[in-house]
Image (cartoon, rainbow, N blue to C red; front, side, top):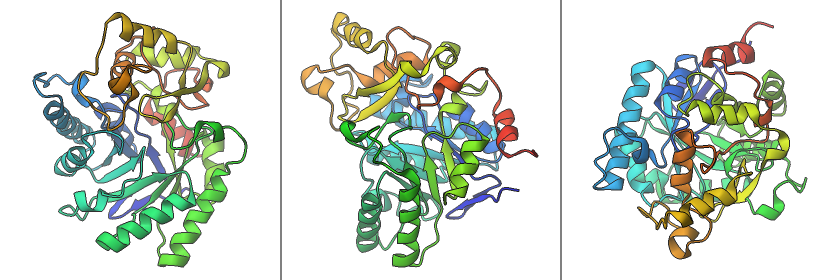
Length: 354
Protein backbone atom coordinates (compact mmCIF):
# COMPACT_ATOMS: atom_id res chain seq x y z
CA UNK A 1 0.00 0.00 0.00
CA UNK A 2 1.49 3.32 -1.04
CA UNK A 3 1.38 6.18 1.34
CA UNK A 4 -0.07 9.40 0.01
CA UNK A 5 1.62 12.73 -0.52
CA UNK A 6 1.27 15.90 1.53
CA UNK A 7 2.79 19.15 0.27
CA UNK A 8 2.18 22.07 2.60
CA UNK A 9 -1.52 21.98 3.49
CA UNK A 10 -2.52 19.80 0.56
CA UNK A 11 -2.75 16.00 0.54
CA UNK A 12 -3.50 13.44 -2.16
CA UNK A 13 -3.89 9.65 -1.89
CA UNK A 14 -1.00 8.78 -4.21
CA UNK A 15 2.66 9.92 -4.30
CA UNK A 16 2.46 11.30 -7.81
CA UNK A 17 2.65 14.72 -9.41
CA UNK A 18 1.87 15.03 -13.09
CA UNK A 19 4.61 17.03 -14.78
CA UNK A 20 3.87 20.35 -16.43
CA UNK A 21 4.07 20.18 -20.22
CA UNK A 22 3.73 23.28 -22.36
CA UNK A 23 2.32 24.61 -24.51
CA UNK A 24 -1.06 23.29 -23.35
CA UNK A 25 -0.06 19.62 -23.46
CA UNK A 26 -0.94 19.50 -19.77
CA UNK A 27 -3.91 21.81 -19.71
CA UNK A 28 -7.12 21.63 -17.73
CA UNK A 29 -8.26 18.21 -18.97
CA UNK A 30 -5.14 16.29 -18.04
CA UNK A 31 -4.57 18.17 -14.79
CA UNK A 32 -8.22 17.80 -13.79
CA UNK A 33 -8.30 14.06 -14.42
CA UNK A 34 -4.99 13.41 -12.64
CA UNK A 35 -6.38 15.30 -9.63
CA UNK A 36 -9.66 13.39 -9.89
CA UNK A 37 -7.77 10.09 -9.72
CA UNK A 38 -5.77 10.97 -6.62
CA UNK A 39 -2.58 12.60 -7.86
CA UNK A 40 -1.58 16.24 -8.14
CA UNK A 41 -2.62 17.66 -11.51
CA UNK A 42 -0.45 20.38 -13.00
CA UNK A 43 -1.26 22.98 -15.66
CA UNK A 44 1.77 24.23 -17.60
CA UNK A 45 1.46 28.02 -17.71
CA UNK A 46 3.70 29.11 -20.64
CA UNK A 47 2.01 30.19 -23.87
CA UNK A 48 -1.57 29.55 -22.79
CA UNK A 49 -2.77 32.66 -24.64
CA UNK A 50 -1.97 31.03 -27.99
CA UNK A 51 -4.64 28.37 -27.66
CA UNK A 52 -7.22 30.34 -25.74
CA UNK A 53 -10.77 30.76 -27.02
CA UNK A 54 -11.05 33.90 -24.92
CA UNK A 55 -7.94 35.57 -26.35
CA UNK A 56 -8.60 38.93 -27.96
CA UNK A 57 -5.18 39.10 -29.61
CA UNK A 58 -4.72 42.70 -28.53
CA UNK A 59 -2.50 42.01 -25.53
CA UNK A 60 -0.69 38.66 -25.29
CA UNK A 61 0.07 39.00 -21.58
CA UNK A 62 -3.49 39.95 -20.64
CA UNK A 63 -4.74 37.02 -22.74
CA UNK A 64 -2.20 34.75 -21.07
CA UNK A 65 -3.46 35.70 -17.62
CA UNK A 66 -7.10 35.16 -18.56
CA UNK A 67 -6.31 31.84 -20.24
CA UNK A 68 -4.61 30.61 -17.06
CA UNK A 69 -7.61 31.60 -14.93
CA UNK A 70 -9.85 29.76 -17.39
CA UNK A 71 -7.70 26.60 -17.31
CA UNK A 72 -7.71 26.51 -13.52
CA UNK A 73 -11.48 27.02 -13.36
CA UNK A 74 -12.12 24.23 -15.88
CA UNK A 75 -9.71 21.87 -14.12
CA UNK A 76 -11.58 22.37 -10.84
CA UNK A 77 -14.87 21.67 -12.63
CA UNK A 78 -13.45 18.19 -13.35
CA UNK A 79 -11.98 17.71 -9.86
CA UNK A 80 -13.69 20.11 -7.42
CA UNK A 81 -11.91 18.60 -4.41
CA UNK A 82 -8.66 17.78 -6.17
CA UNK A 83 -5.21 19.26 -5.74
CA UNK A 84 -4.33 21.24 -8.85
CA UNK A 85 -1.11 23.14 -9.24
CA UNK A 86 0.74 25.02 -11.94
CA UNK A 87 4.21 24.89 -13.41
CA UNK A 88 5.66 28.39 -13.83
CA UNK A 89 8.94 28.82 -15.72
CA UNK A 90 11.24 31.44 -14.24
CA UNK A 91 12.47 32.07 -17.81
CA UNK A 92 9.21 33.66 -19.03
CA UNK A 93 9.03 37.44 -19.08
CA UNK A 94 5.63 37.58 -17.36
CA UNK A 95 6.70 35.26 -14.53
CA UNK A 96 5.53 37.58 -11.76
CA UNK A 97 2.10 38.03 -13.34
CA UNK A 98 1.72 34.29 -13.99
CA UNK A 99 2.51 33.43 -10.37
CA UNK A 100 0.04 36.02 -9.06
CA UNK A 101 -2.67 34.85 -11.49
CA UNK A 102 -2.06 31.24 -10.43
CA UNK A 103 -2.70 32.19 -6.82
CA UNK A 104 -5.78 34.24 -7.71
CA UNK A 105 -7.12 31.35 -9.79
CA UNK A 106 -6.91 28.86 -6.94
CA UNK A 107 -3.73 26.91 -7.70
CA UNK A 108 -2.84 24.95 -4.58
CA UNK A 109 0.83 24.66 -5.39
CA UNK A 110 3.34 26.34 -7.67
CA UNK A 111 6.13 24.27 -9.15
CA UNK A 112 8.86 26.46 -10.56
CA UNK A 113 12.07 25.83 -12.49
CA UNK A 114 13.89 26.85 -15.71
CA UNK A 115 15.86 29.22 -13.50
CA UNK A 116 16.01 29.74 -9.75
CA UNK A 117 12.63 30.87 -8.34
CA UNK A 118 14.17 33.24 -5.80
CA UNK A 119 11.25 35.72 -5.89
CA UNK A 120 8.50 33.12 -5.41
CA UNK A 121 7.83 33.74 -1.67
CA UNK A 122 7.47 37.50 -2.24
CA UNK A 123 5.06 37.00 -5.14
CA UNK A 124 2.86 34.62 -3.15
CA UNK A 125 3.00 36.41 0.22
CA UNK A 126 -0.75 37.15 0.17
CA UNK A 127 -1.53 33.46 -0.37
CA UNK A 128 0.20 31.59 2.49
CA UNK A 129 -1.67 28.35 1.77
CA UNK A 130 -0.20 28.02 -1.73
CA UNK A 131 2.60 25.45 -1.52
CA UNK A 132 5.90 26.42 -3.15
CA UNK A 133 7.92 23.74 -4.92
CA UNK A 134 11.19 24.61 -6.67
CA UNK A 135 12.70 22.33 -9.32
CA UNK A 136 16.43 21.68 -8.92
CA UNK A 137 19.01 19.30 -10.32
CA UNK A 138 21.64 19.82 -7.60
CA UNK A 139 22.01 20.09 -3.84
CA UNK A 140 23.73 23.44 -4.35
CA UNK A 141 20.64 24.91 -6.03
CA UNK A 142 18.39 23.65 -3.23
CA UNK A 143 20.69 25.17 -0.62
CA UNK A 144 20.81 28.51 -2.42
CA UNK A 145 17.01 28.69 -2.68
CA UNK A 146 16.47 27.69 0.96
CA UNK A 147 18.96 30.22 2.35
CA UNK A 148 17.69 33.05 0.18
CA UNK A 149 14.02 32.34 0.92
CA UNK A 150 14.65 32.02 4.65
CA UNK A 151 16.79 35.12 4.91
CA UNK A 152 14.52 37.36 2.81
CA UNK A 153 11.07 35.95 3.59
CA UNK A 154 11.29 33.56 6.55
CA UNK A 155 9.98 30.85 4.26
CA UNK A 156 11.27 27.47 3.12
CA UNK A 157 10.09 25.22 0.28
CA UNK A 158 7.12 22.94 0.91
CA UNK A 159 8.69 20.27 -1.32
CA UNK A 160 11.51 19.98 -3.84
CA UNK A 161 11.43 18.37 -7.27
CA UNK A 162 14.80 16.86 -8.20
CA UNK A 163 14.87 16.59 -11.97
CA UNK A 164 17.20 14.18 -13.73
CA UNK A 165 18.56 15.96 -16.82
CA UNK A 166 19.66 12.61 -18.26
CA UNK A 167 16.05 11.42 -18.65
CA UNK A 168 13.56 14.29 -18.27
CA UNK A 169 11.75 15.91 -21.19
CA UNK A 170 11.45 19.57 -22.09
CA UNK A 171 13.74 22.32 -20.85
CA UNK A 172 16.58 21.07 -18.66
CA UNK A 173 18.50 23.10 -16.10
CA UNK A 174 21.91 21.67 -16.85
CA UNK A 175 24.77 22.44 -19.23
CA UNK A 176 24.42 20.37 -22.42
CA UNK A 177 27.91 18.88 -22.18
CA UNK A 178 27.07 17.38 -18.77
CA UNK A 179 23.81 15.74 -19.86
CA UNK A 180 24.24 12.04 -20.50
CA UNK A 181 27.87 12.03 -19.35
CA UNK A 182 27.05 9.45 -16.67
CA UNK A 183 28.25 11.62 -13.79
CA UNK A 184 24.81 12.68 -12.57
CA UNK A 185 23.27 10.53 -9.85
CA UNK A 186 19.64 11.51 -9.36
CA UNK A 187 18.98 9.50 -6.23
CA UNK A 188 22.21 10.57 -4.55
CA UNK A 189 20.93 14.11 -5.13
CA UNK A 190 17.47 13.21 -3.79
CA UNK A 191 18.98 11.82 -0.59
CA UNK A 192 21.40 14.72 -0.19
CA UNK A 193 18.60 17.29 -0.54
CA UNK A 194 16.45 15.37 1.95
CA UNK A 195 19.34 15.18 4.44
CA UNK A 196 20.08 18.87 4.01
CA UNK A 197 16.57 20.00 4.94
CA UNK A 198 16.38 17.53 7.81
CA UNK A 199 19.80 18.34 9.29
CA UNK A 200 20.09 22.04 8.50
CA UNK A 201 16.48 23.13 9.03
CA UNK A 202 14.91 20.23 10.97
CA UNK A 203 12.40 20.07 8.13
CA UNK A 204 10.86 16.91 6.70
CA UNK A 205 9.55 17.91 3.28
CA UNK A 206 8.77 15.63 0.33
CA UNK A 207 11.58 15.25 -2.17
CA UNK A 208 10.12 14.30 -5.53
CA UNK A 209 12.02 12.48 -8.27
CA UNK A 210 11.34 13.68 -11.83
CA UNK A 211 12.57 12.21 -15.08
CA UNK A 212 12.48 8.70 -16.48
CA UNK A 213 9.47 7.44 -14.52
CA UNK A 214 7.29 5.40 -16.86
CA UNK A 215 5.85 2.37 -15.06
CA UNK A 216 5.31 0.78 -11.66
CA UNK A 217 8.87 -0.56 -11.57
CA UNK A 218 10.28 2.95 -12.08
CA UNK A 219 7.95 4.33 -9.40
CA UNK A 220 8.87 1.68 -6.86
CA UNK A 221 12.57 2.12 -7.64
CA UNK A 222 12.29 5.86 -6.98
CA UNK A 223 10.53 5.31 -3.65
CA UNK A 224 13.03 2.63 -2.63
CA UNK A 225 15.92 5.01 -3.42
CA UNK A 226 14.61 7.67 -1.03
CA UNK A 227 12.17 9.76 -3.06
CA UNK A 228 8.85 10.54 -1.37
CA UNK A 229 6.98 10.77 -4.66
CA UNK A 230 7.55 10.96 -8.40
CA UNK A 231 6.75 13.50 -11.04
CA UNK A 232 5.58 11.84 -14.26
CA UNK A 233 4.95 13.66 -17.52
CA UNK A 234 5.62 11.76 -20.75
CA UNK A 235 3.50 8.76 -19.71
CA UNK A 236 0.44 11.00 -19.44
CA UNK A 237 0.81 12.27 -23.01
CA UNK A 238 -0.56 8.97 -24.31
CA UNK A 239 -3.85 9.23 -22.42
CA UNK A 240 -7.25 10.13 -23.78
CA UNK A 241 -7.39 13.08 -21.39
CA UNK A 242 -4.10 14.70 -22.43
CA UNK A 243 -4.81 18.12 -23.95
CA UNK A 244 -2.56 17.61 -26.99
CA UNK A 245 -3.92 16.71 -30.44
CA UNK A 246 -4.08 13.07 -31.50
CA UNK A 247 -1.21 13.62 -33.96
CA UNK A 248 1.02 14.72 -31.05
CA UNK A 249 0.17 11.54 -29.15
CA UNK A 250 0.74 9.48 -32.30
CA UNK A 251 4.29 10.88 -32.52
CA UNK A 252 5.00 9.23 -29.17
CA UNK A 253 3.51 5.95 -30.38
CA UNK A 254 5.63 6.09 -33.56
CA UNK A 255 8.98 7.18 -32.11
CA UNK A 256 12.06 5.06 -31.42
CA UNK A 257 14.86 5.74 -28.90
CA UNK A 258 17.03 7.25 -31.65
CA UNK A 259 14.36 9.86 -32.44
CA UNK A 260 14.75 11.39 -28.97
CA UNK A 261 17.61 13.78 -28.35
CA UNK A 262 18.75 17.19 -27.17
CA UNK A 263 18.25 20.51 -28.90
CA UNK A 264 19.20 24.00 -27.78
CA UNK A 265 16.21 26.17 -27.00
CA UNK A 266 16.34 29.84 -27.91
CA UNK A 267 15.78 30.34 -24.16
CA UNK A 268 19.41 29.32 -23.71
CA UNK A 269 18.58 25.96 -22.15
CA UNK A 270 18.95 22.49 -23.62
CA UNK A 271 15.72 20.60 -24.15
CA UNK A 272 14.86 16.97 -24.81
CA UNK A 273 12.50 16.39 -27.72
CA UNK A 274 11.84 14.49 -30.91
CA UNK A 275 14.64 16.13 -32.85
CA UNK A 276 14.16 14.88 -36.42
CA UNK A 277 12.42 18.04 -37.60
CA UNK A 278 14.40 20.84 -35.92
CA UNK A 279 15.69 22.11 -39.29
CA UNK A 280 12.11 22.21 -40.63
CA UNK A 281 10.94 24.17 -37.59
CA UNK A 282 13.60 26.80 -38.21
CA UNK A 283 12.89 26.88 -41.95
CA UNK A 284 9.21 27.49 -41.34
CA UNK A 285 9.97 30.57 -39.25
CA UNK A 286 12.40 31.82 -41.90
CA UNK A 287 9.90 31.20 -44.72
CA UNK A 288 7.17 33.03 -42.79
CA UNK A 289 9.65 35.82 -41.94
CA UNK A 290 8.42 35.38 -38.36
CA UNK A 291 9.78 37.99 -36.00
CA UNK A 292 9.38 37.68 -32.27
CA UNK A 293 5.62 38.11 -31.86
CA UNK A 294 5.33 38.82 -28.14
CA UNK A 295 8.63 38.75 -26.23
CA UNK A 296 7.47 35.88 -24.00
CA UNK A 297 10.95 34.94 -22.72
CA UNK A 298 13.34 37.00 -20.60
CA UNK A 299 16.21 35.68 -22.73
CA UNK A 300 15.62 34.56 -26.32
CA UNK A 301 18.11 34.04 -29.13
CA UNK A 302 15.33 34.15 -31.71
CA UNK A 303 14.02 37.50 -30.55
CA UNK A 304 17.49 39.01 -30.32
CA UNK A 305 19.12 37.77 -33.53
CA UNK A 306 16.85 35.26 -35.32
CA UNK A 307 18.83 32.27 -34.02
CA UNK A 308 17.05 28.89 -33.95
CA UNK A 309 13.26 29.42 -33.97
CA UNK A 310 10.33 30.85 -32.03
CA UNK A 311 9.85 28.15 -29.42
CA UNK A 312 6.43 29.15 -28.13
CA UNK A 313 4.98 29.06 -31.65
CA UNK A 314 6.72 25.74 -32.38
CA UNK A 315 5.31 24.17 -29.20
CA UNK A 316 1.86 25.57 -29.94
CA UNK A 317 1.87 24.13 -33.47
CA UNK A 318 2.88 20.73 -32.11
CA UNK A 319 0.12 20.72 -29.51
CA UNK A 320 -2.38 21.42 -32.28
CA UNK A 321 -1.12 18.44 -34.28
CA UNK A 322 1.58 19.81 -36.62
CA UNK A 323 4.27 17.12 -36.59
CA UNK A 324 6.20 18.64 -39.49
CA UNK A 325 7.03 22.06 -38.03
CA UNK A 326 5.97 21.66 -34.40
CA UNK A 327 8.38 20.91 -31.56
CA UNK A 328 7.43 17.81 -29.57
CA UNK A 329 9.11 17.66 -26.17
CA UNK A 330 9.45 14.26 -24.51
CA UNK A 331 11.46 12.30 -21.95
CA UNK A 332 13.83 9.47 -22.81
CA UNK A 333 11.11 6.85 -22.29
CA UNK A 334 8.58 8.24 -24.79
CA UNK A 335 9.41 5.39 -27.19
CA UNK A 336 7.84 2.97 -24.69
CA UNK A 337 4.40 4.34 -25.53
CA UNK A 338 2.46 1.59 -27.28
CA UNK A 339 -1.20 2.53 -26.77
CA UNK A 340 -3.54 5.30 -25.73
CA UNK A 341 -4.94 4.59 -22.29
CA UNK A 342 -6.89 6.63 -19.74
CA UNK A 343 -5.53 8.46 -16.72
CA UNK A 344 -7.50 6.07 -14.53
CA UNK A 345 -5.79 3.08 -16.19
CA UNK A 346 -2.37 4.63 -15.55
CA UNK A 347 -3.18 5.03 -11.85
CA UNK A 348 -4.50 1.47 -11.66
CA UNK A 349 -1.29 0.13 -13.20
CA UNK A 350 0.90 2.22 -10.87
CA UNK A 351 -0.99 1.82 -7.63
CA UNK A 352 -3.55 -0.99 -8.00
CA UNK A 353 -3.34 -4.37 -6.33
CA UNK A 354 -0.64 -6.57 -7.81
